[in-house]
Image 1 (cartoon, rainbow over the protein chains, first blue to last red):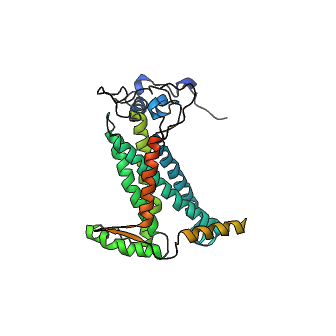
Image 2: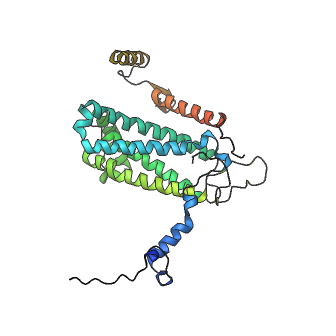
Image 3: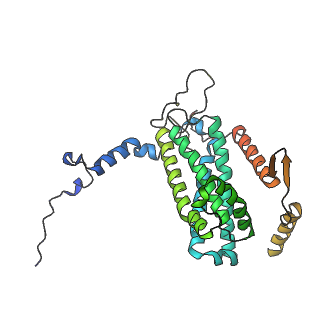
Length: 240
Length: 63
């Protein structure tokens, strides 16, 4: 015979707020998160009408390319260097990894130009802009360490050309571009982690502040230049 | 199918020789490879096209 404690908690109170729990950090964090990003703003069904332009497509295109980069990089990490150098499937996945990076940067630069000429930091969107810029710079580092991890003459050439520049900054003491193991670890662990976190934060900020509207033709400020509440509108396209 | 692929690769190879040393453009202290210049040109082209080409709208979308 086993004694069991009676479960006095009603099932429907598991997810409910109790007044006595209001000071718990989990409750505070949950409330802050839901207040900042309510579900309908986090995953809206519609976008403002001005988003119906091809220039707004390149943010999502960058995200899609990043997803392929991470996916192919994961497959390469699973099977290892001899696989991606010698088997035809490995060479194919390796090429997919390279070309998805090319698409990633191509789309990101067009996205950057579009947002720059829209002054996308307007309407309390500075943090969105800054996380995008930092993600871009870190992505350059991630790509650079990738080129250093190719294990061919190209990577040798790039590392010996880059070492003088890196050493001139003083960073060479801790960041040795001729150290293959160190560059591979930065490429497959540290930099992708930072890029993914920054891109995630960037997307959440886009959802919080809304997609930046174009400049108004008239002198009056556009209706959507303030931080977006619920989407004003009406295009059902999925863009950012 | 394999012969077709080889033919396409041969055709592309005759247009762009990737086996030789890269070609560079010099302009004062600026030096850039033709390959990078082509990519930058394509990005400018796509950027302009993205602004000018109208986006297809769904019926029922308000303006």
